[in-house]
Image (cartoon, rainbow, N blue to C red; front, side):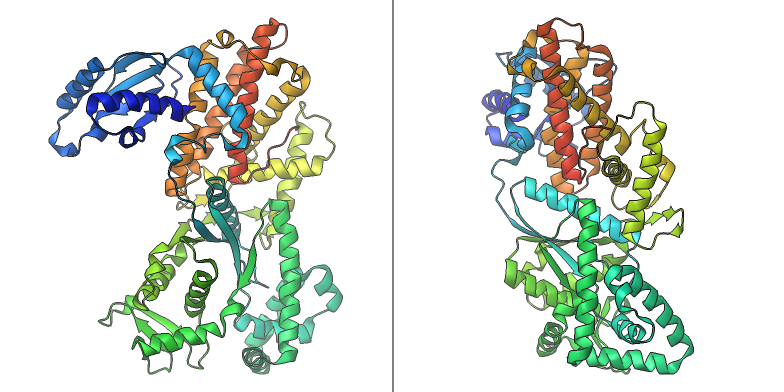
Length: 578
């Protein structure tokens, strides 16, 4: 595999440069494939070896690269050494490349790329990822959808790298909206509707009671009193709140199952209503709590009264706020999980909130605050269903399934499927996830159903189609060919390009693990699919000699395996027919 070749190159460089091989491995990168010409397999940037880059002019780096190349020798692994713009390039023995890459892909299976030298010495960590976090009885916004798929990707990647991951869904299940809901349900609620469609019914009640409260002060007062009863632990009020929460979670779990997402813990703001009072006492005991004229309590993070650095932590009636509950939740999770890293996945609008929460943890004396990280993402505009604005995640999933079924029905190549609804949903979800993950997570983007469902070009539909077509090859020609293969039969440019690309998978995983951006994996998988499409058109299996057919089938099987691995990391379930 790539790491084996990297290590071999690093060993030779180490002898010439008098540096430990470990210091060189990450400086040796796989060369992206080129459609215009055959490229080397690995390159070493001379720049990366020079400590003070600014002191070295370009011609000097070029001379250094040439001098270094002259000292190196070809061996059983490296068949050619050349220089580029400030780089030393290495071409791997073609037969060895073919044999090693294909063997490694098949042997490592779902672990291909993860056993790389790039990840060696990586300590196992305890990681908490908080994501999705919708508000009970409010709209499941597209922002929550983004949080769900991004958080799922981060958790998948961390888990694949061997870390112990805890996935937390931190529900908005406390606050004044429950005063409104409690009152609203007593006025407009129906038990049978609550049981059959809790999210829909609670939302309808919430909208109706909000209108009433705006016009009728008695309703607003009643809602305020209901929330106070909740805060004081009134059994009747709490029983109704618990019912709302339990039924909502049950329905969320059903919807998350359709998305292929699971959580280890359904937490919520309600868990920390008492512990947030302890946080307030602690802030007070450290002299950090300041009372305002309005009766609220604030923390001045600047120390000099800068209004932009003042964080409100308590309302005038003594109840806690979102920030206070987040502080209590962080402290509680540290006690419970003793995490090495805690990642919050929310939209970029909450950037300041998390900066303040982490800063408050620091000044409260919790050094582990530096282990907390906010992964922000941009806003999606224009996601509407045919019925109008998106209200619930289920609306999005149903729309995806409906549109994909229509698309599949209009395509002549669509196979007879056992479960067309399920296939349509999996292909549609892939389309949605790839559109979302193609750019930087922080970027806003305009949503387009037409672009999502294009079958050609860089889309999730194209990835699913490629996987299904490669699976179909294995079904058609059986696995009899796959016991052994002749590496000499895979030396065409199309085969070599695929092998070179497979070689780079570990590097792409490494990059995504460093910046938590899925776009590196997306770009890699789309290129792999385009290469497979070219190879499928030119490297025929039918009517080829058995030896050639077997070798090509081996290559296509390796492509399908890596494609499936990458898709699963992104949260996509690969389909075998479509």
